[in-house]
Image 1 (tube, rainbow, N blue to C red):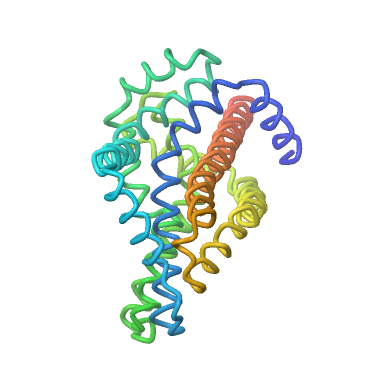
Image 2: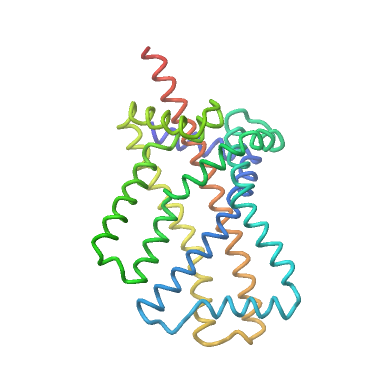
Length: 293
């Protein structure tokens, strides 16, 4: 069943080009912030835990000096504002719009219009889900590891309980956005409905979550390979202090820009794929419940 769903999701994603475009717009702000968090935590772990003499702060300082020297500060401020808007404002709108496109196969304008109607519900859910996201959890644990406080039993207990809540939300909340966008429920009612549907089909949901986890690891592994080369080159630039080399500095800018675009595009594909995947699971479970009544 899961394999058939996977093939069906891939087919629909390839056929609906507007869905991928809206998904890319949806995930861009998150992708940029995730790259920053990933590199920042990698930098902290290498320096404070393993006493590495190579600091990514040198790359950020280089970019900042180049930006100020070329009087591009205003453009960078506008870019940061756009990323913040994309993370907090545009994301919930496009989030709802993606589901509308999956269900009704409409255009981007129609989908975004529906997203504006559902903005506050999706904003509330996005803020709540961020606290229980794997990215937030992983970044926090990495920071605690850097600070050498993971040997404290109280902190271990808190991290363990939080990790359990992250796992439970992954298993039982997958249909929440669907109930908000399609059925029109409020956030907490949608969560209850999602938990109820997941419990009613628990074994199938567990298999679906495991299948999803394997695919996500596979997708991000391939993305990681793509991003490993520019990351290694950045470290070589830092180690050999090649910032003043014109060719190397140009390459650094190109790699950074391409890295952001590649990660955001891959994230858009993964996001759209699994939104279709969860919706098709929802339809199947709903049909099974209707036929059993």
